[in-house]
Image 1 (tube, rainbow, N blue to C red):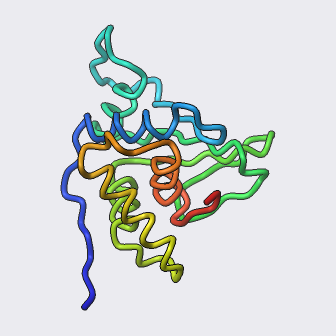
Image 2: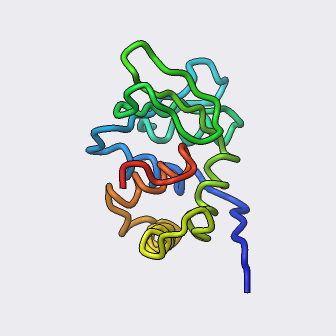
Length: 151
């Protein structure tokens, strides 16, 4: 039997959880939002709230891969900075597709990798409270690169 996961909705809270879990303590990943989006930012919004609001308003955030060394992966629009950093432009559709790929594991032949990514997705889906840095980084890798690059 073949199945396919479709992510129908992501909330601001979902995105804040993903972004904060993936970037807090990460040595390779950073995110910025576009400067002029027209979104309403409250004084008590954290940076992850701004990123989430930008994505939900239809904008793409910039995800920086500091380990890129001049290499990029996947089909997302990207630019290589002079220092070799990869820059990925990620919007809501890319996030939904990447998370669905993690849930399905259809892009990998490695059973261990497939099982682990499905577990990462389930932890995230169930509120993200059990999602640690390595799991959130794995979800972001699939979102950005279409596969696991850094394990």
